[in-house]
Image (cartoon, rainbow, N blue to C red; front, side, top):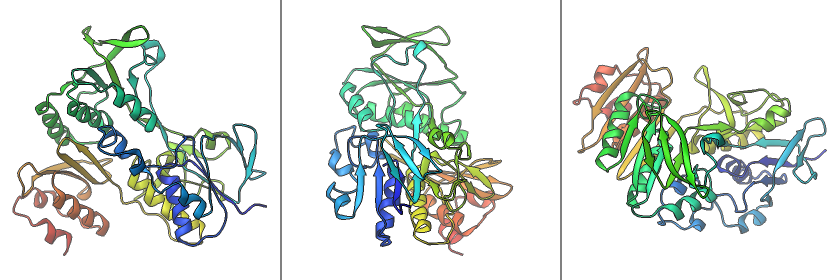
Length: 406
């Protein structure tokens, strides 16, 4: 039986597993399977510095291509796994070839939701943002004076809007819910971010649905909105969430819920198979959640690699996230699901603010807008289980650093 470690998915989580195994001096053969034609790379800069032309693609690579050969990592590019044969402990590739494994890691990520074809979602000029191909196509369309419609007022949509304004593109954001960031942030954070985008010339329309697109010559040219209004547009960015890529696991008979179900060690319902990153539903403080973030993919990937190498230490997520929009850095620590109390706090510097989430008196998370001190202090409090009363946080005279370092 093979002792090979096969990793399906060459994104942030899959690469983290491979790199950490080698850092831990695990000498078993590793095969890393990626769907794209290029070596593993960072994705967050795609929609920011890479799209703006401020960062070349080679700077996005996790490691030079030579690293894989030097570290005995067999990198298979433009390859797809069609199915998993758990009985034979093999993965079956799209060309029918097989690869045996002793340990299998699923790092299959998530896929952006697309708009249906029957409303024009397949027209040229309608983009999602997930990989280098998406970024290259969108960059070619970003011309001064062009008209962009962003469908979805989440972080992906708002980041696209911010980048487009740097290209001097006219931007309209439509959000079906009654406010932007409805799924991920409190109204207080949404109001701050809305004001920032409005100040930069973005037209944000909430409680606004899309009926369909109209095209000319196969290219999107107009959007018909739910209220009957028609917008002339040149391109669209769709940011309406993602779907975990758990079909491979589901077809193999593994437990799947909101993603591939894993325990605190990253193990699936098959002890020989692990899963990591955006495709995973994992335990977190008595709940089960799916975290769509690069830091989680890296941290979980490294923790899983340690387990595969012999560690008995469970992975305990410490969620954090960031979003760069214009000259604003939004940093998020914690997970705000189920909050019942929110307080806001002005920072020491002009324009610095933070939004703090509580449930039953316990601190859950913070959104820090240009306020690194609030972010760092909140992160320390969350890690240490420190739960300051909301009214203490709201008091501008409170020394956050003293609270975080009792």
